[in-house]
Image 1: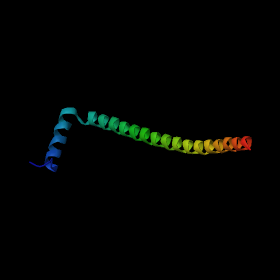
Image 2 (image 1 turned 120 degrees about the vertical axis):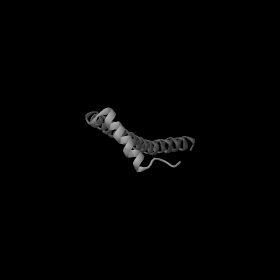
Image 3 (image 1 turned 90 degrees about the vertical axis):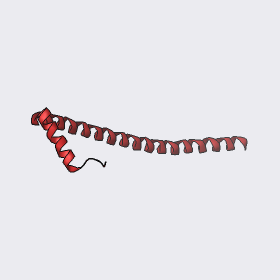
Image 4 (image 1 turned 45 degrees about the horizontal axis):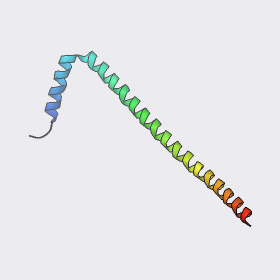
Length: 80
């Protein structure tokens, strides 16, 4: 009652080969490989975009802090 063993996987592969044929399996394998590459590329682009957004946010926070200190300084000068 365990999982699939080597024998079972070989039998399944042979049945699929007989049903679909070698040429069709090559095409399916090629299409599957392209899909996996496209998925990986999309994931990498998404990660790069998120890291650049984090960097922009960090730089923006510094700029906001500088502006806040300037307004605070001008308010202090006005009250004096």
